[in-house]
Image 1 (tube, rainbow, N blue to C red):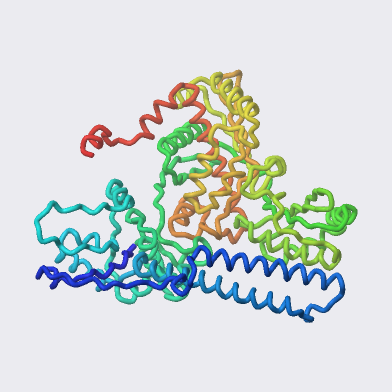
Image 2 (cartoon, rainbow, N blue to C red):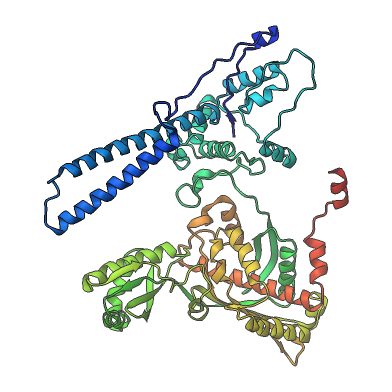
Length: 601
């Protein structure tokens, strides 16, 4: 940040100093509150404080007596009049005393202790002046007055630097890179730094998203004094995220994308993009894909497809809340509620409403299909339409919130584990015995035993909720980041139970994953960004399917489940064969020679 302390004007000029004739210091005495008082300051303060509280106590006692005796307050006696005069005098004194002290403190602080934002010309003048004065000029720039140079040659005294400067010299922070800026950009940056222009309004004021991000980044560096050199700015379409993906951007984060596959699922091959910074993850999933491929592929079944939203409403009594519950769950009223709900979108279709009561509070969990969109906004609009209709039928209904956490979004919840949310998918494969031995380097019986003790019993011992798997969230997060899904919905989307069983007389392995709440979409949100759109195109599920609305999103959900199946199979095999630590040391460690780094530093 281009901020520096205002230099205090020295008591002599450079010309006088060089001649050895310093100017005489002008004695300037600041006014004090006690200059006009005949008594010492502490006695005067004590007198007026005592007067103030005594008079206030007297007046309060008198006013209480008047109120008790029904005497009008505007009827004032001589003693009360004198008390009021004394009160006014004491208030004037106290205000004057503290006012003078505050003004004196403020003026002193603004003269010698304020930080100013200098422009480039003033900065250059200060640097040139400091270079002419010599090494002691650094103290002047920090706000210290440099004494006149002594006539005798004595050992120079080194001024003690503030602790902050010493700390910064020790840490050696990364230098702030100052890009070449135009005069207009520099003026806008100064306005943002000074707080005159809100950072969030740059896009609307400038009409150029790239320029707004550049100015915001530079202003942020100056405000914080921290370098953002490693955060890339160029090469991103900031207009594509305006108003829908990210506010106040200053750059973008690079996440490498690897490819696992081919994944043979339902007779089709898919190359699965995975965005991750965890070494060994893509390689492990790729090995699982190979084991599935050479064993004939995996099969998937979509069990359910419905996004949910659950508002909470309140009544004056629990009886009234129960009446609305019966009304909403009555099949005779479903057609009317569906009509109200479905008019919000041509793709939204109400599937059902599940209610739960807590006292006089009613939670209604709406479930609907949402086409190829993930559907949170779509279902919220439909729910709002139904609430508006119910408000006319139940005027005493108080809508507390359109989301009452009975949905439940981005939180682990049993209702999602049992009822499902988004896409519910089960995926399975039979891995041949020779593949288990040659590709996965383990035995069928060992995998079955490990799955029972780890994924089932171990998770039950931990009290897991939907976490009966090895690392489903690893694969879900990587695919979500690559395809523009909401990464926070990894919480419920990673609910998974992994099952392994020996089949065909104990020779082959049957492995399956059941995932009841995979929340994905192929339109909206981050799916429209160039990188994420390319990954969706690689899978063949980009955008909306016009012939069969919703089929692209459902296919993406099955691909996620198939990828999880491959990841579970490979990791469990690595643990069973004792290869987990070895593989991570090979693929998840830096290849840099640490000894050379330490020696060079």
